[in-house]
Image (cartoon, rainbow, N blue to C red; front, side, top):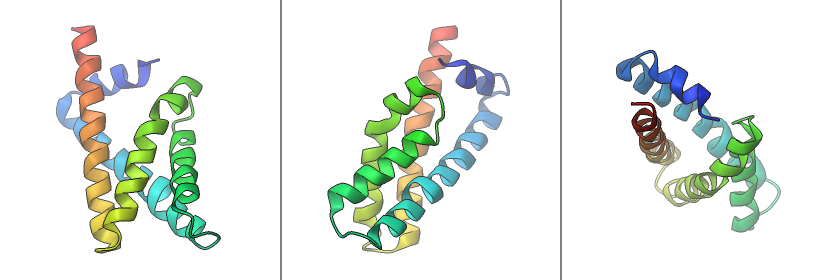
Length: 116
């Protein structure tokens, strides 16, 4: 269901882009930074940490079909965060948020093309 994306585009590209950045930032804080930090307290197994992060990230999207479809990008975002946090947590946050924003803008553009 792409109803949310269609409604987002109804606000115009500038507002939609700002909201995409805000949503991606929040999801990076909750789905990657916090969950990776928390899971790392219990295990050092990277696979478990990545899968935990991707699962929580997916569940943040609420709609069952979207939950399933965003799991792969959740894995990529968790992996990127883990790799970049070796440099710094803020570097990890901004790189992961940037990847997420880029992904969401592509999705929005595809929805835009489908309704045009």
